[in-house]
Each structure stands twice: as structure tokens, then as C-alpha cells.
Amino acid sequence: MGHPATFLFACLIVVVWAVAGPAFGFNQHWQLFINTFTTIATFLMVFLIQNTQNRDSAAMQIKLDELIRSDKDAHDALLDLEELTEHELNVIKQRYERLAEQARERLRTGRKDTGKIREVV
Image 1 (cartoon, rainbow, N blue to C red):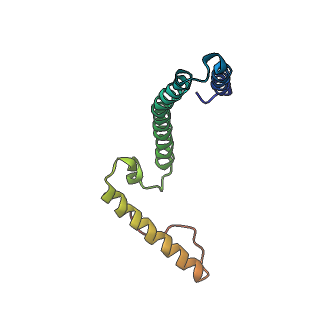
Image 2 (image 1 turned 135 degrees about the vertical axis):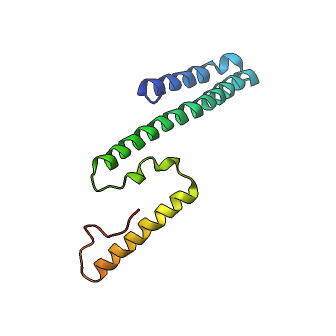
Image 3 (image 1 turned 90 degrees about the vertical axis):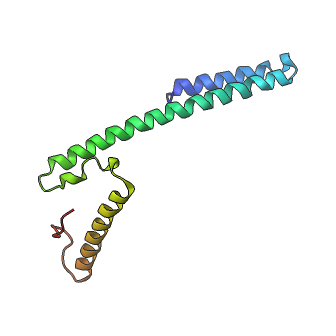
């Protein structure tokens, strides 16, 4: 649905509808046609877009999981985080916030912020 040809097709429908206006005397049926058509199209597109976003999100999560899995120093506990509860996510987030603050403190004192800060996730 996101192809230029689909957009041109939608434009063609609007042009045909507009040109047909005088033949129908710009009456309520003429207006009802485009209103109904666009409402149905919008309704269906919501589900199509959501399906596409869900598939893209799942693919991105798999790719991120593979990157985590491939790094020998990465925490395997971070795999599949999207399946955790809100509380579990907040606990992990707080740990990473502490790590970030420690790294900023190292920068403020003139040290490097690269390397491992010793805290287990």
C-alpha cells in the first residue's frame, strides 16, 4: 500500500469522483460515496499498518537479540526484554542508569568512560 502506484490510484479515484460531481449534481449520494470509501479505506489501513509495525518490531528485536548473543561480554539476560513485566524492566533500567551516572562521573574527573564498570545486570 505504500507504493507510488497505490498513491496514484487513490488520486485517480478522487479525480474521477470530483469530475463525476456535476453529473450527480453534487448531491448527497455523490458526497456519501467518497466519505464511505475513505472511511472504509482508513479503517482497513489501520490494521494493515499495525500488522506491518508488529512484523518490523519483531524483526528488529530478533536482530538486537542476535547482536547481544554474539558479544561474549554482553549480558544474555538482556535477550527478549520485551517479554518482561514493567517492574522487571524498571529494575534493569535503574541499573543501567546507575552505570551511566558512574560513567559521567568518570568523565567529570578526567577519566575515560569506556571499558567495563563492574556491575552485574
